[in-house]
Amino acid sequence: MIRTLHDRGAMCSAPYTSWDGQLTPDYYAHLPENKAPRGRSIRPADEDGNLGYGSHPTGQLEDFVWDKGDDIAFETAPCAICWTRTAWC
Image (cartoon, rainbow, N blue to C red):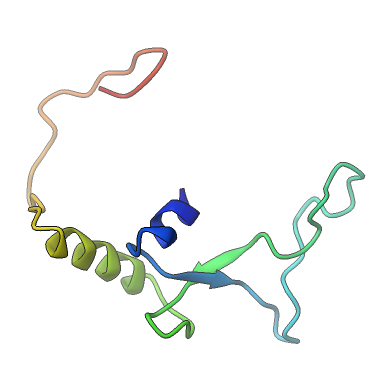
């Protein structure tokens, strides 16, 4: 999902690195089936690829929606929520 948002220009993200500049280790790096022991963690990024914060993805997604000419409904509540075996409806 994150890759799709990135590829469509909706949200910027970057690999998360430790204080030493290395990609962060995966929590399950010690397991033999883990083929990517480092580099799975991502973080928000600003439009220039610099460290972003929680407001960055929110603002980027908002801008993406407005740029497409769509509306965002604020202060609304769902009128019905249901779950089927295949999807939310």
